[in-house]
Length: 550
Image 1 (cartoon, rainbow, N blue to C red):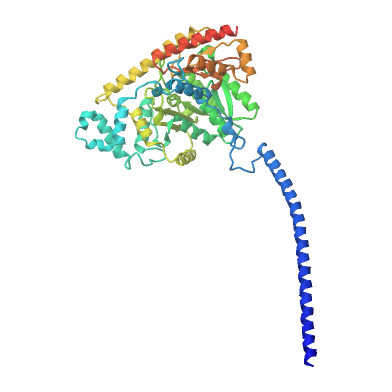
Image 2 (cartoon, rainbow, N blue to C red):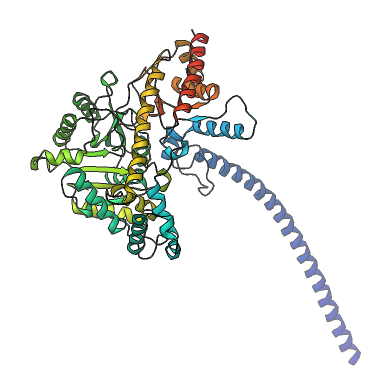
């Protein structure tokens, strides 16, 4: 009985073992089949992934090259940046200046010996071409920058008394020092200085609430245009030729440029008939013209407007309901004997209450005039007859840049409040001021005469500002060659003057000109000998060019 039971148990164990073995084999076989199936699927999926990757890449490339946003926006390239940035042009610091700086570097390093130096006539940057700073300004700034100088027992031997007093005044009024932010509109005491200056200049009180200090006039212009341009159907009347800041800003803001041409045959005069034609043409295209820009004295033409012409412009603005932007940064630079600067503000107020609905923006800067403090970045603008709620929005814009730089604000204060006649610095200040302005006048006369002696070049003597805008007749073969190269003829000519004569001027196409005419803009800021040498070189190169393409 026991053996039978033992045999039965052993049989059951053997069956169980056999069953487990079979089950394991079945499991192994199943795993092998699953593995084979997985490999087959993986291969299929791999092929699909390749196809999908190629498809995604193709879509990305298609979208990158189209006007639609890129799938990879963080990877910036020239095609997916703001296209308005690409389209904006600013001629006075463009390709030619880059070439000129490289040439000057090669001269400095002895790699180029055909010129002693490049004569830079491309931009109104007086100190860069040798103009000396006004002593009073730099003396005051030196103490404000380092107030510990006031503790020096010999300070009265180093500085005139009025310089010390002015520096102390600024140190007290800036409270937290020039390293701290000021009010977004600017230091209150500087704003009040500007208001007094405007009142003394025009004979009418100025409201400090409507005055904003800025990092140069350019920032103020940008803030104001940013306030009024809403879309691409908003237009701005721009003089042609014009300072390219305006066209560049309009491109960036998405506004529409509406050109009005200054009359070269009448000394670059501004015609109301031309303004009427420009407005009519724009409105036929449903452009809503919001404002007109007038640069007085003119850049690049040097034209100074007379009061009667200014009255006509103000009447035109009232009739067409346009804001007047008066760029008056060259108000100290008037050289014509029978001319003097008059602000649009004064003319508008002289015209009486009936024109009190004409809205005016006007600006000034420390970069021009006789100061030439371009790098200090100081300026101001004033708004007139503009709603208080709009003013608040402009103030909000001013807040986004925190504040104008503090040193520039102090230079603005010194520009509008120079030393008085009974102060020690007055005599030197007047001597330096008159010397700079007289030299600018002499250079403008000399350069006009010398340029008119070059065959095919003609120009008007500038009444003001810092520039001459000569016309240049180019041979037809030269024009054809430029067009084949995809270059504007006056650009190619200016490039030729740079590379062959070592003179950097800016082609008229950068400022705008009537179709079929060619010009260039040159400053008369460099010293007289440098300018004479520049014209001598230009004459030789231009005469050679005329023979070559005859």
